[in-house]
Image (cartoon, rainbow, N blue to C red):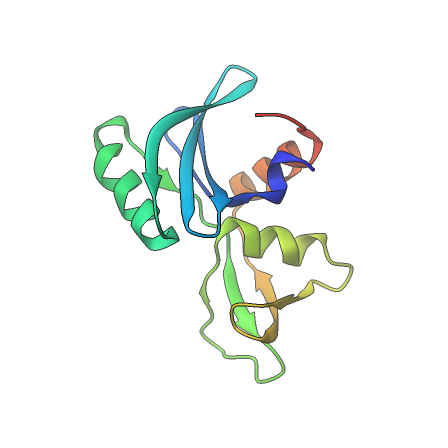
Length: 131
């Protein structure tokens, strides 16, 4: 299992941040420290809570969430799309066709327009095996 298997979302300041899923109802933030990822003590019970907590607690450090593209549902592809989380982007970009099944929505989905910064992090994490 690689580190990217549990990554839910990512953020940046001068360094990188990852939101990791520990259990079904436990999420924690990691910060890049050199070549390693280190827990920083920010934990939450939901993804939404974890994203809000990081934006509040890390605001002074210049924290921002990565833009991981827009998620479109298929076959009735909505034209607006919703902001994708890092794991949505990873699933879509790892698929040969770009389409993946999202169990949360119960539909096939596709992610487009991810930032280069998010794609670079995805490639970096694909090779990482520890945190």
